[in-house]
Image 1 (cartoon, rainbow, N blue to C red):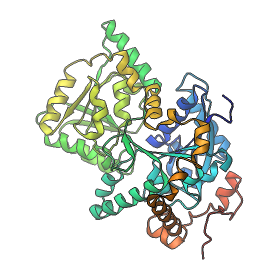
Image 2 (image 1 turned 135 degrees about the vertical axis):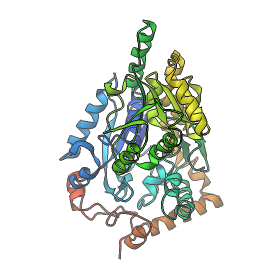
Image 3 (image 1 turned 90 degrees about the vertical axis):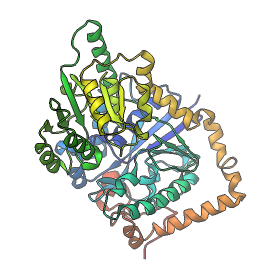
Image 4 (image 1 turned 30 degrees about the vertical axis):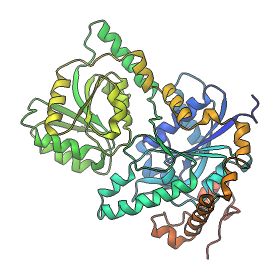
Length: 473
């Protein structure tokens, strides 16, 4: 198959290594594994931040003076974790870090990162996040096929804010609007996310191979009748109340009399660190709080039980990693954990008493050994196959997708639905084209077009707009 006949998959995501968040790590592995068989061309498109914004988000004071330096760091990080050559490209789009949202938001028309002549298939990791303030070419027009992968339960997070129910009501409709306009297909990692038309529920994430290697070493220790786990219970996650810490500390406080011998170690960094430390000190139990570390760190290898009461995750990456390492996971009986219930070391609970029973039982026994099939289900090889099937990529060759604008998708333009969608997209285009309306809906001021520093870093022409972009008054 020639390069021209290959599918070109451009994966756009909302974060990048060295920020160890799910939308930085998982799309990076997805790009590597999709490109690994050489059957398709893959480009990962990640945000570039100016040094000022890098300092706000990247840990350990890591900064990059150029996109090429950042790319080298990303590739080195991934090369340490996979055993095959990296066959994908990396490109950057301009972004800014929104301190109020603790998120990176796109600046300008980020679809420009892929030239029109190369635009084939786009994967939008967090499609709502990438398109809330999108102002430029319509994704469905530029690309033959657009797949959205929904990572985050935004509604659950917003409900916890002041006037949360009103905000969640409005956000639900905003999300449905932009995702419907810009995506042909939507994959929801679990049913914990809001529902979307034309969507399918499928966990298309795997775990870093290092975790499976750790699990195999623990399995060998068990076979040799050695003691593979010498520590008790722990939890790791970004140290904000909404990431499970509130639920965990409430459970421990309410049931500390029933768990007098329990010792729990918490690992994480975040804006609620001091409050969480203070709450932990008030407990009669031994709950120690430590700075965050990479979950693959040898420090975690000997813990036997991973406690994760979070119900805000869609599919929790650290839960999958703990299972891959051969640990027992105690988690809530919640739809976000549905994928994990197939594994024998996943123990769910419905209430506080169930949490106590599951925790005591887990600490008192050894984890069951995972079968080869179960280990495979956690891998990126299996996740990639699930993605190809769920997104219908196997049915869409490059030749077919090249014709799609003129046939499959364009042929529906005569329908009322298509006309309404085009009108809806134009309304969004208009609303996102003016500073006042953008900032009213939460955009970062000055994010309609890249500023001078972003343009210089990325080699863009200053104050040049997309041909489809309206000029501000």
